[in-house]
Amino acid sequence: MDARLDELAVELRLRSQREDRRLREVLGDALPALGLSAEDRRLVARRCYRVLQQERRLDFALDGALRGRGEQRVMPEALVEPARHVCAMLLDLEIDVPEASRRLPRIDWQFVTSVDARIARARDPDTRFGLTWSMHDWIAARFREEFADEAAAIAKSLNEEPPLTLRANTLKVKDRDELARRLADEGVATRPTPHAPHGLVVAGALSLFSSKAFQDGSFEQQDEASQLVCHVVAPPPRGRVLDACAGAGGKTLALAAALKNQGEVLAVDPHDQRIASLVERRRRAGTSNVRSLVVAEDGWPEEVAAFARSADRILLDVPCTGIGSWRRRPDARWSLRTVAFPNLQATQAMLLDRALAHLQVGARVIYSTCTLFAAENERQVERVLARDPGLELVRVKEILGKEAAAPITDPSGTFLRLRPHVHGMDGFFAAVIRRRSVTS
Image (tube, rainbow, N blue to C red):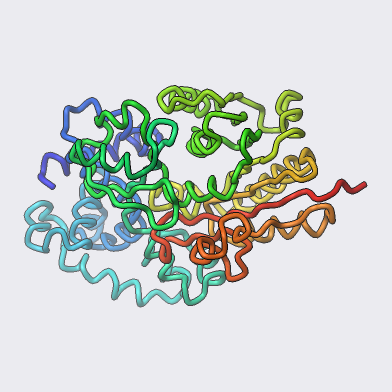
């Protein structure tokens, strides 16, 4: 990446900090207006995300690296962000020590390259893990306790660049093969996703979002894991689906397409900006079976409650720690606080209880998260099953078939359980809960 783009990446990171805005929002607003090529925009965004992703390790690597004595070794604020960017390139082996020294001669870059040896000398194992993989110590402790021998592999995968994955919109194209041919004609190479039936992984995205295929709604950007959650929802023909935590509507649109624009999908969310985004996306996608509403966080209005009581499926993609999507949202690892964890669990329990209270006999709640922690996943499901004998699990292998489910579920085939280091997609969990009877 040339120096001009490096400087731009630094400036955009600084803008995010000055304006106290998420980096994703700043990049989304700024990059399209700068007249850059699609490839240059991708490079700038990648650099910004990479620095944010590794921020703790970079700061540790730079600690004590400024040349000078005493107070002179305290890095000036104006140098911090440029140093992080050069440090990221050096540690990623994109430049060498002489090039780093040419760019910022005030820093001892040879000392910076000793970061791993210095981390290894940290006494606390959670601190060593947190510094190595750039996360808070309390999250590092959870990783080590919950994932044991897999902890490092999972953490490493969450620091890698995610694939760009699309879902073919079958309201506009016959299948993903047709979409792949259309994109190839426009110079975009793709390959099929291994598990999601409508997914494509993009190999070259230089003209992707200026393509005719994007403009006419033939695809949506959606990670394979998110697509698989929608596959597990499996709405019946002409069914009624409540997307109870719809966000900007990626899953809503997938469900509308699965229903072939028949039946009805009601998408609700407490954030009006997300619903506004969904409205725009559904126009491009050509859906005619979707309604959307902004609802309060503390309860459903009667219109939504009545729909839930008649719904065949209630999709509950609850707020969570978001560990599984760190590759795409690196800022989430720094905004997460210890106090948020029990609060999130309480919110998850409240949302699940509300959905189940409205569930009709024979209908299903699909409880999903983009986290890896059992306390937010299996434990929440176990809690409601233990309390209400009128509920039962529907195994994912019964929905997808044993062969298709085996690589993407737990050993029993009960839960959708996706891991970035195993599946090359976001970390996701989903459980399907069916009401078999009404208990008093």
